[in-house]
Image 1 (cartoon, protein in one colour):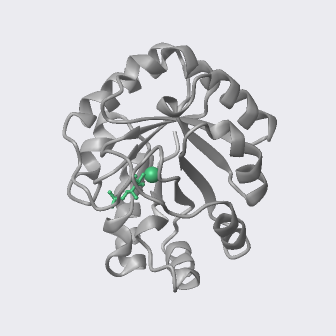
Image 2 (cartoon, helix red, strand yellow):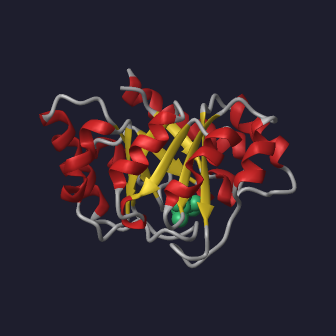
Length: 221
Ligand code: DX5
Ligand code: ZN
């Protein structure tokens, strides 16, 4: 299993993105988490297709796109063309998750399903075999800088055993309120991709990302 930090760009200074990418790359970061919000599925707006396609030209980081938008199937192809490497959509945002999975697969990109804190992991059972990653939200989606919801750790543990019991290699990503103080808790519970926004970008980016990567290396070996 590969362990990775996926820094959430939402917390970055958008006037200095090139510097941010260089700092992340210099710290050995491989992934970048891109939070797309539509003001309907979540009570906030962020950025979308145009921004992703311009930053695609500025970095080779793996684009882990988190769609917080209603009826995501409408934009799957656009996000794939913009440069997404993995497209996560919310189970709660669509009527036919299987159709969204198929649409993402058709573009050749990796596919992830995301669930909100109040959605039980059992809701994922019908789709586990079809996806590359499950993204568990550990805060209510919509805003960076919130506190980690403690019950999320039990959800990670349960999902990891559901995945292991089926002999699958599915990645588990955790998103929201994760910092250096609780990263070991989420890794011990069984996730292998860690999103961190404020904890990476609200300070020295390379230094913080380097500290996260050091912890991740312990789990990798
Ligand atoms: C929330 C987003 C998260 C958020 C994480 O809706 O999905 O990715 O940016 O930010 P922190 O790490 O600050 O909780
Ligand atoms: Zn996110």
